[in-house]
Image 1 (tube, helix red, strand yellow):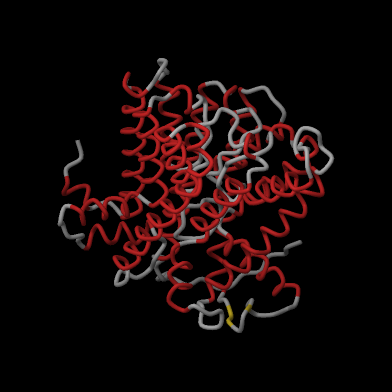
Image 2 (image 1 turned 30 degrees about the vertical axis):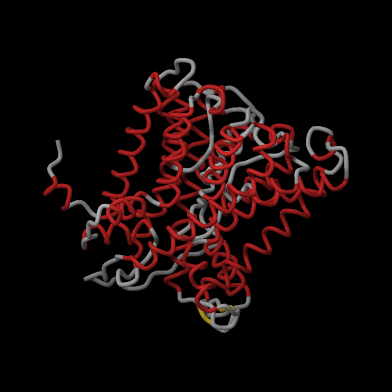
Length: 442
Protein backbone atom coordinates (compact mmCIF):
# COMPACT_ATOMS: atom_id res chain seq x y z
CA UNK A 1 0.00 0.00 0.00
CA UNK A 2 1.33 3.43 -0.94
CA UNK A 3 2.09 5.59 2.09
CA UNK A 4 0.98 9.23 2.26
CA UNK A 5 4.63 10.33 2.23
CA UNK A 6 5.31 8.43 -0.99
CA UNK A 7 2.06 9.69 -2.44
CA UNK A 8 3.19 13.24 -1.82
CA UNK A 9 6.27 12.65 -3.99
CA UNK A 10 4.17 11.90 -7.05
CA UNK A 11 3.93 14.67 -9.67
CA UNK A 12 0.59 16.52 -9.43
CA UNK A 13 -0.72 15.08 -12.75
CA UNK A 14 0.05 11.53 -11.56
CA UNK A 15 -1.82 12.20 -8.33
CA UNK A 16 -4.72 13.62 -10.28
CA UNK A 17 -4.88 10.55 -12.52
CA UNK A 18 -4.67 8.36 -9.41
CA UNK A 19 -7.59 10.20 -7.84
CA UNK A 20 -9.67 9.76 -10.99
CA UNK A 21 -8.81 6.07 -11.06
CA UNK A 22 -9.75 5.76 -7.40
CA UNK A 23 -13.12 7.37 -8.13
CA UNK A 24 -13.69 4.86 -10.94
CA UNK A 25 -12.91 1.95 -8.60
CA UNK A 26 -15.13 3.32 -5.84
CA UNK A 27 -17.95 3.92 -8.31
CA UNK A 28 -17.60 0.38 -9.66
CA UNK A 29 -17.98 -1.11 -6.18
CA UNK A 30 -20.97 1.09 -5.32
CA UNK A 31 -22.77 0.38 -8.59
CA UNK A 32 -22.27 -3.37 -8.12
CA UNK A 33 -24.02 -3.34 -4.73
CA UNK A 34 -27.46 -4.99 -4.66
CA UNK A 35 -28.97 -1.72 -3.37
CA UNK A 36 -27.84 0.03 -6.57
CA UNK A 37 -29.53 -2.20 -9.15
CA UNK A 38 -32.97 -3.57 -9.91
CA UNK A 39 -31.42 -6.48 -11.81
CA UNK A 40 -27.92 -7.92 -11.26
CA UNK A 41 -25.15 -6.55 -13.47
CA UNK A 42 -21.65 -7.84 -14.10
CA UNK A 43 -18.46 -6.28 -12.79
CA UNK A 44 -17.68 -5.35 -16.39
CA UNK A 45 -20.96 -3.42 -16.67
CA UNK A 46 -20.33 -1.66 -13.35
CA UNK A 47 -16.73 -0.75 -14.25
CA UNK A 48 -17.70 0.57 -17.70
CA UNK A 49 -20.57 2.65 -16.29
CA UNK A 50 -18.41 4.06 -13.49
CA UNK A 51 -15.63 5.00 -15.92
CA UNK A 52 -18.14 6.65 -18.24
CA UNK A 53 -19.62 8.65 -15.35
CA UNK A 54 -16.32 9.80 -13.80
CA UNK A 55 -14.97 10.83 -17.20
CA UNK A 56 -18.35 12.50 -17.95
CA UNK A 57 -18.64 10.61 -21.22
CA UNK A 58 -22.11 9.04 -21.22
CA UNK A 59 -21.45 5.87 -23.21
CA UNK A 60 -23.52 3.06 -21.69
CA UNK A 61 -23.76 -0.73 -21.79
CA UNK A 62 -26.86 -0.87 -19.53
CA UNK A 63 -29.93 1.37 -19.39
CA UNK A 64 -29.43 3.61 -16.31
CA UNK A 65 -33.13 4.41 -15.97
CA UNK A 66 -34.31 0.80 -15.78
CA UNK A 67 -31.28 -1.04 -14.38
CA UNK A 68 -30.30 1.26 -11.50
CA UNK A 69 -32.36 2.09 -8.43
CA UNK A 70 -32.63 5.62 -7.07
CA UNK A 71 -29.55 4.88 -4.97
CA UNK A 72 -27.62 3.72 -8.05
CA UNK A 73 -28.77 6.74 -10.02
CA UNK A 74 -27.68 8.93 -7.11
CA UNK A 75 -24.23 7.32 -7.23
CA UNK A 76 -24.09 8.10 -10.95
CA UNK A 77 -25.03 11.74 -10.29
CA UNK A 78 -22.27 12.10 -7.67
CA UNK A 79 -19.68 10.51 -9.96
CA UNK A 80 -20.74 12.82 -12.79
CA UNK A 81 -20.53 15.89 -10.56
CA UNK A 82 -17.12 14.88 -9.22
CA UNK A 83 -15.74 14.09 -12.66
CA UNK A 84 -17.23 17.15 -14.33
CA UNK A 85 -16.14 19.78 -11.84
CA UNK A 86 -12.88 17.99 -11.18
CA UNK A 87 -12.21 15.77 -8.23
CA UNK A 88 -9.97 18.29 -6.53
CA UNK A 89 -12.60 21.00 -6.87
CA UNK A 90 -15.08 18.58 -5.39
CA UNK A 91 -12.62 17.72 -2.61
CA UNK A 92 -12.01 21.42 -1.94
CA UNK A 93 -15.76 21.89 -1.48
CA UNK A 94 -15.91 19.05 1.07
CA UNK A 95 -12.85 20.42 2.88
CA UNK A 96 -14.41 23.88 3.06
CA UNK A 97 -17.66 22.43 4.42
CA UNK A 98 -15.66 20.63 7.12
CA UNK A 99 -13.70 23.78 7.95
CA UNK A 100 -10.41 22.37 6.66
CA UNK A 101 -7.80 24.41 4.81
CA UNK A 102 -6.47 23.51 1.38
CA UNK A 103 -2.68 23.35 1.51
CA UNK A 104 -0.02 23.93 -1.12
CA UNK A 105 0.22 20.28 -2.37
CA UNK A 106 -3.53 20.15 -2.86
CA UNK A 107 -3.47 23.49 -4.66
CA UNK A 108 -0.80 22.18 -7.04
CA UNK A 109 -3.04 19.26 -7.98
CA UNK A 110 -6.01 21.58 -8.26
CA UNK A 111 -3.98 23.85 -10.53
CA UNK A 112 -3.46 21.02 -13.01
CA UNK A 113 -7.08 19.91 -12.82
CA UNK A 114 -8.18 23.42 -13.81
CA UNK A 115 -5.44 23.94 -16.43
CA UNK A 116 -4.03 26.96 -14.57
CA UNK A 117 -0.39 28.01 -14.36
CA UNK A 118 -0.54 30.19 -11.23
CA UNK A 119 -1.76 29.22 -7.78
CA UNK A 120 -2.63 32.64 -6.33
CA UNK A 121 -6.16 32.79 -7.73
CA UNK A 122 -7.00 29.09 -7.58
CA UNK A 123 -9.28 29.20 -4.56
CA UNK A 124 -11.12 32.21 -5.96
CA UNK A 125 -11.61 30.24 -9.18
CA UNK A 126 -12.86 27.24 -7.20
CA UNK A 127 -15.45 29.43 -5.48
CA UNK A 128 -16.59 30.73 -8.86
CA UNK A 129 -16.85 27.17 -10.19
CA UNK A 130 -18.96 25.96 -7.30
CA UNK A 131 -21.27 28.97 -7.35
CA UNK A 132 -21.75 28.80 -11.10
CA UNK A 133 -22.38 25.05 -11.02
CA UNK A 134 -24.94 25.30 -8.22
CA UNK A 135 -26.69 28.28 -9.79
CA UNK A 136 -27.03 26.77 -13.25
CA UNK A 137 -27.90 23.27 -12.09
CA UNK A 138 -30.65 24.49 -9.77
CA UNK A 139 -31.97 26.87 -12.43
CA UNK A 140 -31.90 24.15 -15.07
CA UNK A 141 -33.62 21.67 -12.76
CA UNK A 142 -36.37 24.21 -12.04
CA UNK A 143 -37.03 24.72 -15.75
CA UNK A 144 -36.97 21.00 -16.56
CA UNK A 145 -39.34 20.33 -13.65
CA UNK A 146 -41.98 22.32 -15.52
CA UNK A 147 -42.04 19.46 -18.06
CA UNK A 148 -41.14 16.43 -15.96
CA UNK A 149 -43.28 17.03 -12.82
CA UNK A 150 -46.64 17.07 -14.67
CA UNK A 151 -45.56 13.95 -16.57
CA UNK A 152 -44.07 11.86 -13.73
CA UNK A 153 -45.39 13.41 -10.51
CA UNK A 154 -43.55 15.48 -7.92
CA UNK A 155 -40.99 13.00 -6.58
CA UNK A 156 -40.07 11.29 -9.86
CA UNK A 157 -40.35 14.50 -11.88
CA UNK A 158 -38.07 16.49 -9.58
CA UNK A 159 -35.48 13.70 -9.57
CA UNK A 160 -35.56 13.48 -13.37
CA UNK A 161 -35.10 17.26 -13.55
CA UNK A 162 -32.20 17.31 -11.08
CA UNK A 163 -30.40 14.33 -12.63
CA UNK A 164 -30.65 15.68 -16.19
CA UNK A 165 -29.57 19.17 -15.05
CA UNK A 166 -26.47 17.75 -13.35
CA UNK A 167 -25.72 15.52 -16.34
CA UNK A 168 -26.17 18.41 -18.79
CA UNK A 169 -24.10 21.03 -16.97
CA UNK A 170 -21.26 18.54 -16.56
CA UNK A 171 -21.45 17.54 -20.23
CA UNK A 172 -22.02 13.91 -19.21
CA UNK A 173 -24.85 12.93 -21.55
CA UNK A 174 -26.37 10.38 -19.16
CA UNK A 175 -30.16 10.17 -19.42
CA UNK A 176 -32.66 8.12 -17.42
CA UNK A 177 -34.83 7.65 -20.51
CA UNK A 178 -34.25 4.54 -22.63
CA UNK A 179 -34.28 6.50 -25.92
CA UNK A 180 -32.45 9.56 -24.60
CA UNK A 181 -34.37 12.78 -25.15
CA UNK A 182 -36.02 11.69 -28.40
CA UNK A 183 -39.51 12.04 -26.89
CA UNK A 184 -38.77 15.74 -26.28
CA UNK A 185 -37.40 16.64 -29.72
CA UNK A 186 -40.04 19.37 -30.15
CA UNK A 187 -40.35 20.39 -26.48
CA UNK A 188 -38.83 23.86 -26.44
CA UNK A 189 -38.06 24.03 -22.71
CA UNK A 190 -36.05 20.80 -22.92
CA UNK A 191 -34.30 21.54 -26.23
CA UNK A 192 -33.23 24.98 -24.98
CA UNK A 193 -32.51 24.32 -21.29
CA UNK A 194 -30.34 21.22 -21.80
CA UNK A 195 -28.12 22.84 -24.50
CA UNK A 196 -27.86 26.05 -22.48
CA UNK A 197 -26.55 24.05 -19.53
CA UNK A 198 -23.95 22.04 -21.43
CA UNK A 199 -22.82 24.97 -23.57
CA UNK A 200 -22.34 27.07 -20.42
CA UNK A 201 -20.49 24.24 -18.68
CA UNK A 202 -18.39 23.65 -21.80
CA UNK A 203 -17.31 27.25 -22.34
CA UNK A 204 -15.03 27.11 -19.34
CA UNK A 205 -15.11 28.62 -15.88
CA UNK A 206 -12.23 30.96 -16.66
CA UNK A 207 -14.26 32.50 -19.49
CA UNK A 208 -17.38 32.76 -17.34
CA UNK A 209 -15.45 34.50 -14.58
CA UNK A 210 -13.86 36.83 -17.14
CA UNK A 211 -17.27 37.72 -18.58
CA UNK A 212 -18.72 38.46 -15.14
CA UNK A 213 -15.80 40.68 -14.12
CA UNK A 214 -15.28 42.55 -17.43
CA UNK A 215 -18.91 42.73 -18.70
CA UNK A 216 -17.90 44.02 -22.12
CA UNK A 217 -16.09 42.63 -25.16
CA UNK A 218 -13.02 44.85 -25.40
CA UNK A 219 -11.36 44.14 -22.02
CA UNK A 220 -11.89 40.37 -22.27
CA UNK A 221 -8.78 38.22 -22.39
CA UNK A 222 -7.61 36.73 -25.68
CA UNK A 223 -8.58 33.26 -24.45
CA UNK A 224 -12.15 34.40 -23.71
CA UNK A 225 -12.50 36.09 -27.09
CA UNK A 226 -11.25 33.00 -28.91
CA UNK A 227 -13.58 30.71 -26.94
CA UNK A 228 -16.68 32.83 -27.44
CA UNK A 229 -16.00 33.45 -31.13
CA UNK A 230 -15.10 29.82 -31.83
CA UNK A 231 -18.13 28.51 -29.93
CA UNK A 232 -20.50 30.80 -31.85
CA UNK A 233 -19.00 29.81 -35.22
CA UNK A 234 -19.14 26.08 -34.43
CA UNK A 235 -22.76 26.30 -33.25
CA UNK A 236 -23.96 28.15 -36.36
CA UNK A 237 -21.89 26.05 -38.77
CA UNK A 238 -22.94 22.77 -37.18
CA UNK A 239 -26.60 23.82 -37.07
CA UNK A 240 -26.73 24.74 -40.76
CA UNK A 241 -24.76 21.70 -41.91
CA UNK A 242 -26.72 19.19 -39.82
CA UNK A 243 -30.00 20.60 -41.08
CA UNK A 244 -28.82 20.51 -44.69
CA UNK A 245 -27.51 16.94 -44.45
CA UNK A 246 -30.38 15.37 -42.48
CA UNK A 247 -33.46 17.43 -43.44
CA UNK A 248 -35.00 14.70 -45.61
CA UNK A 249 -33.59 11.67 -43.76
CA UNK A 250 -36.67 9.78 -42.45
CA UNK A 251 -34.57 8.24 -39.67
CA UNK A 252 -33.62 11.62 -38.17
CA UNK A 253 -34.97 15.09 -39.04
CA UNK A 254 -37.19 13.85 -41.88
CA UNK A 255 -39.16 11.73 -39.42
CA UNK A 256 -40.30 14.74 -37.34
CA UNK A 257 -43.75 16.18 -37.98
CA UNK A 258 -43.14 19.92 -38.23
CA UNK A 259 -40.52 22.35 -39.51
CA UNK A 260 -40.16 23.78 -36.01
CA UNK A 261 -39.34 20.34 -34.62
CA UNK A 262 -36.75 19.79 -37.36
CA UNK A 263 -35.09 23.15 -36.66
CA UNK A 264 -34.98 22.41 -32.91
CA UNK A 265 -33.58 18.93 -33.46
CA UNK A 266 -30.98 20.22 -35.95
CA UNK A 267 -29.79 22.79 -33.39
CA UNK A 268 -29.70 20.21 -30.60
CA UNK A 269 -27.73 17.67 -32.64
CA UNK A 270 -25.33 20.36 -33.82
CA UNK A 271 -24.35 21.42 -30.29
CA UNK A 272 -24.53 18.11 -28.43
CA UNK A 273 -21.31 16.64 -29.95
CA UNK A 274 -19.33 19.34 -28.15
CA UNK A 275 -19.19 17.05 -25.64
CA UNK A 276 -22.66 16.65 -24.15
CA UNK A 277 -23.78 13.36 -25.67
CA UNK A 278 -27.56 13.81 -25.43
CA UNK A 279 -29.67 13.08 -28.48
CA UNK A 280 -33.16 13.98 -29.72
CA UNK A 281 -32.88 11.91 -32.92
CA UNK A 282 -31.49 8.42 -33.53
CA UNK A 283 -27.72 8.81 -33.88
CA UNK A 284 -27.45 5.40 -35.54
CA UNK A 285 -29.67 6.62 -38.40
CA UNK A 286 -27.42 9.50 -39.42
CA UNK A 287 -25.83 9.46 -42.85
CA UNK A 288 -22.09 8.88 -43.23
CA UNK A 289 -21.40 12.53 -44.03
CA UNK A 290 -23.28 13.66 -40.91
CA UNK A 291 -21.39 11.09 -38.83
CA UNK A 292 -18.09 12.54 -40.08
CA UNK A 293 -19.29 16.06 -39.24
CA UNK A 294 -20.26 14.90 -35.75
CA UNK A 295 -16.89 13.21 -35.27
CA UNK A 296 -15.13 16.45 -36.14
CA UNK A 297 -17.19 18.37 -33.57
CA UNK A 298 -16.54 15.67 -30.96
CA UNK A 299 -12.79 15.91 -31.49
CA UNK A 300 -12.83 19.70 -31.03
CA UNK A 301 -14.92 19.59 -27.86
CA UNK A 302 -15.33 22.57 -25.52
CA UNK A 303 -13.12 24.90 -23.54
CA UNK A 304 -10.22 24.58 -21.09
CA UNK A 305 -11.09 24.50 -17.37
CA UNK A 306 -14.59 23.33 -18.29
CA UNK A 307 -16.66 20.18 -17.98
CA UNK A 308 -16.10 19.40 -21.66
CA UNK A 309 -13.54 17.15 -23.35
CA UNK A 310 -11.92 17.05 -26.79
CA UNK A 311 -8.77 18.84 -27.90
CA UNK A 312 -10.55 22.12 -27.02
CA UNK A 313 -11.81 24.98 -29.16
CA UNK A 314 -8.77 27.19 -28.59
CA UNK A 315 -6.49 24.36 -29.71
CA UNK A 316 -8.39 24.05 -33.00
CA UNK A 317 -8.29 27.81 -33.52
CA UNK A 318 -4.55 28.06 -32.90
CA UNK A 319 -3.96 25.20 -35.36
CA UNK A 320 -5.91 27.10 -38.02
CA UNK A 321 -4.16 30.37 -37.22
CA UNK A 322 -0.76 28.69 -37.39
CA UNK A 323 -1.60 27.18 -40.78
CA UNK A 324 -2.80 30.54 -42.13
CA UNK A 325 0.35 32.24 -40.84
CA UNK A 326 2.46 29.66 -42.65
CA UNK A 327 0.73 30.23 -45.98
CA UNK A 328 0.81 34.01 -45.46
CA UNK A 329 4.55 33.72 -44.72
CA UNK A 330 4.13 35.35 -41.34
CA UNK A 331 6.57 34.63 -38.54
CA UNK A 332 3.85 34.09 -35.92
CA UNK A 333 0.04 33.89 -35.95
CA UNK A 334 -2.01 36.78 -34.61
CA UNK A 335 -5.66 37.58 -33.88
CA UNK A 336 -7.59 40.31 -32.04
CA UNK A 337 -4.46 42.47 -31.96
CA UNK A 338 -2.43 39.82 -30.14
CA UNK A 339 0.28 37.49 -31.42
CA UNK A 340 0.82 33.87 -30.50
CA UNK A 341 4.36 32.60 -30.04
CA UNK A 342 5.77 29.41 -31.49
CA UNK A 343 5.54 27.85 -28.03
CA UNK A 344 1.73 27.94 -28.12
CA UNK A 345 1.68 26.43 -31.61
CA UNK A 346 4.04 23.65 -30.50
CA UNK A 347 1.79 22.84 -27.53
CA UNK A 348 -1.36 22.51 -29.61
CA UNK A 349 0.51 20.41 -32.18
CA UNK A 350 1.61 18.04 -29.41
CA UNK A 351 -1.92 17.77 -28.02
CA UNK A 352 -3.48 17.23 -31.45
CA UNK A 353 -0.88 14.63 -32.42
CA UNK A 354 -1.49 12.73 -29.17
CA UNK A 355 -5.25 12.86 -29.78
CA UNK A 356 -4.85 11.52 -33.31
CA UNK A 357 -2.60 8.70 -32.12
CA UNK A 358 -5.07 7.68 -29.40
CA UNK A 359 -7.98 7.63 -31.85
CA UNK A 360 -5.94 5.67 -34.40
CA UNK A 361 -4.76 3.12 -31.82
CA UNK A 362 -8.23 2.78 -30.32
CA UNK A 363 -9.86 2.21 -33.69
CA UNK A 364 -7.18 -0.32 -34.59
CA UNK A 365 -7.78 -2.29 -31.38
CA UNK A 366 -11.54 -2.32 -31.88
CA UNK A 367 -11.27 -3.57 -35.45
CA UNK A 368 -9.04 -6.47 -34.40
CA UNK A 369 -11.66 -8.39 -32.42
CA UNK A 370 -14.99 -6.68 -33.09
CA UNK A 371 -16.94 -7.04 -36.30
CA UNK A 372 -18.82 -4.02 -37.50
CA UNK A 373 -18.81 -1.07 -39.83
CA UNK A 374 -15.49 0.78 -39.69
CA UNK A 375 -17.14 4.19 -39.47
CA UNK A 376 -19.36 3.03 -36.59
CA UNK A 377 -16.38 1.69 -34.62
CA UNK A 378 -14.34 4.82 -35.21
CA UNK A 379 -17.35 6.93 -34.19
CA UNK A 380 -17.41 5.17 -30.81
CA UNK A 381 -13.67 5.74 -30.32
CA UNK A 382 -13.90 9.46 -31.12
CA UNK A 383 -16.93 9.75 -28.84
CA UNK A 384 -14.98 8.08 -26.03
CA UNK A 385 -11.89 10.26 -26.47
CA UNK A 386 -13.95 13.44 -26.65
CA UNK A 387 -15.91 12.25 -23.57
CA UNK A 388 -19.09 12.83 -25.56
CA UNK A 389 -21.22 9.72 -25.20
CA UNK A 390 -22.97 9.70 -28.56
CA UNK A 391 -23.16 6.19 -29.98
CA UNK A 392 -24.13 4.62 -33.28
CA UNK A 393 -24.86 1.34 -31.49
CA UNK A 394 -21.47 -0.37 -31.36
CA UNK A 395 -20.64 0.10 -27.66
CA UNK A 396 -23.22 -2.35 -26.33
CA UNK A 397 -22.03 -5.00 -28.82
CA UNK A 398 -18.33 -4.86 -27.94
CA UNK A 399 -16.55 -7.82 -26.36
CA UNK A 400 -14.46 -7.52 -23.20
CA UNK A 401 -11.40 -6.25 -25.07
CA UNK A 402 -13.46 -3.61 -26.86
CA UNK A 403 -15.01 -2.45 -23.61
CA UNK A 404 -11.59 -2.29 -21.97
CA UNK A 405 -10.24 -0.25 -24.88
CA UNK A 406 -13.13 2.21 -24.69
CA UNK A 407 -12.64 2.55 -20.92
CA UNK A 408 -8.95 3.37 -21.41
CA UNK A 409 -9.78 5.88 -24.15
CA UNK A 410 -12.42 7.58 -21.98
CA UNK A 411 -9.90 7.84 -19.14
CA UNK A 412 -7.20 9.22 -21.43
CA UNK A 413 -9.67 11.64 -22.97
CA UNK A 414 -10.44 13.09 -19.56
CA UNK A 415 -7.07 12.90 -17.78
CA UNK A 416 -4.61 12.79 -20.70
CA UNK A 417 -4.83 16.47 -21.75
CA UNK A 418 -4.30 17.51 -18.12
CA UNK A 419 -1.18 15.40 -17.79
CA UNK A 420 0.16 16.53 -21.16
CA UNK A 421 -0.56 20.16 -20.31
CA UNK A 422 1.50 19.83 -17.12
CA UNK A 423 4.55 18.52 -18.94
CA UNK A 424 4.22 21.14 -21.66
CA UNK A 425 4.09 23.84 -18.98
CA UNK A 426 7.10 22.49 -17.09
CA UNK A 427 9.53 21.84 -19.91
CA UNK A 428 13.16 22.32 -18.96
CA UNK A 429 15.63 24.30 -21.01
CA UNK A 430 18.08 21.96 -22.76
CA UNK A 431 21.60 22.02 -21.32
CA UNK A 432 23.13 21.13 -24.68
CA UNK A 433 22.23 22.87 -27.92
CA UNK A 434 22.82 21.14 -31.24
CA UNK A 435 23.60 22.77 -34.58
CA UNK A 436 20.57 23.37 -36.76
CA UNK A 437 19.76 20.78 -39.41
CA UNK A 438 17.54 20.86 -42.46
CA UNK A 439 14.95 18.39 -43.71
CA UNK A 440 12.67 18.55 -46.72
CA UNK A 441 8.92 18.62 -46.12
CA UNK A 442 6.00 18.27 -48.50
